[in-house]
Amino acid sequence: MWNWAASLRIRDFRLLWGSTLLYSLATGMEQVSVGWLIFELTGSELMVGVGAAARMLPFFLLGLLSGAIADRWDRRKLVQLGSLGASAVALIMALLLLGGLENVWVVIALVAALGCTFAFVLTVRQTFTYDIVGPEYALNGLALGAMAMQGGGIAGSLVSGAVIEAAGAGWQFAAAAVCYLLSALATLTIRDPGRSLRPAAASVLQNLSGYIRLLRNYRLLLVLMLLTAATEILGFTHMTLLPVFAKEVLHVGPTGLGVMTAARQGGGLLGLWILAGLGGVRKKGLMMFATATGFGAGLMAFSLSGNIYSFIGVLLFVNACAMAVDTLYKTLMQDAVSDEERGRAMGSWVLSIGFAPVGHVGIGALAGVVGAPRALLINGAALAAISVVSALALPRIRRLD
Image 1 (cartoon, one colour):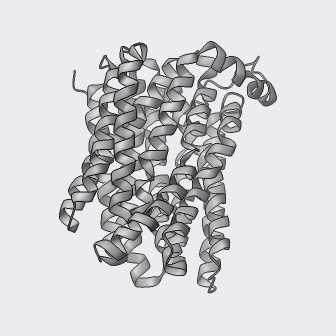
Image 2 (cartoon, rainbow, N blue to C red):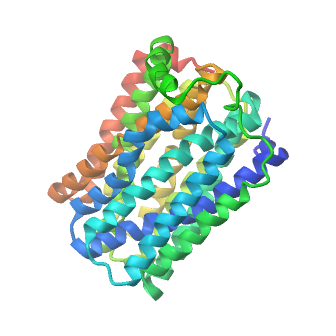
């Protein structure tokens, strides 16, 4: 039955959803400003890739730790602390940029600090959503949460491009700091602390050591981690090249980059809206493989986009597939483990997407050699091939409901 707003009937989920929307306003601003700022400072595609990698590296380094903590402590408080930490880092970035900062490595270091806060918040939000809505509405709740991220990202991207052109990146980061703060405040009246609060909860160290047992007991989780990592490296890293397309291929400037980033978020929103409406759909495994294949095919189509309009059309399709397959990964990972281990399952997901620095640096270097359109053509062909081969070779995954 088509009931895309089912989880929004739950009060605590509505508050978490609102907090996510505010958080994504800030991250949408950040994604536009960081790529443009680094490209302006260096003129290097590779350095844009390095900046994106710096933001994603904490996902790899802190993924397991964030999952272990999410299975031990109050998830509501963890979301609040992570949002406050992001606000503090964004404020520091704003003050330095307004003071005339031009050192790209300081910018990259602060971007990495934002990535550290994001790694924790992302892990906890996925697990906390499942806590609040339960397994019956898990796919719907996770899709709606991702829709909030995409919707806020659209607004943040559009605002960011305009603010950068009118007042500079410093004031844009100041606005992001306010949004992160409001996101933390929005969670204060959530009643559910999350199922991590158990009298006999294991310590964080025990939870970390439990990852080996978790992956041994749930081989399905390990396979999903590998597929997630491959999709992240080959697919999601296309966003690294958006500043290059905006400045050197399509010649549309920072405002055009904001529109392109908003279109990327809009495509994701469309894919998630469709997925949320499917609710308790069966054959999630088959849907996952089909969507990942479409993701790869869409990346290949970028090489045929000769103007901003066709580029945005492809961008909408690519990111509809991207966000849908990512939500399917998260849902199947949490479904695969026991309730007490879902924090670590989401930590495993964050670890998998933490392989993105390999893709960000790789696609930046590849674009420097063959150009941005051909770099996406190569990555898209590889992702589509991996998805088709995996679907044929892994019937157990394909049959997952």
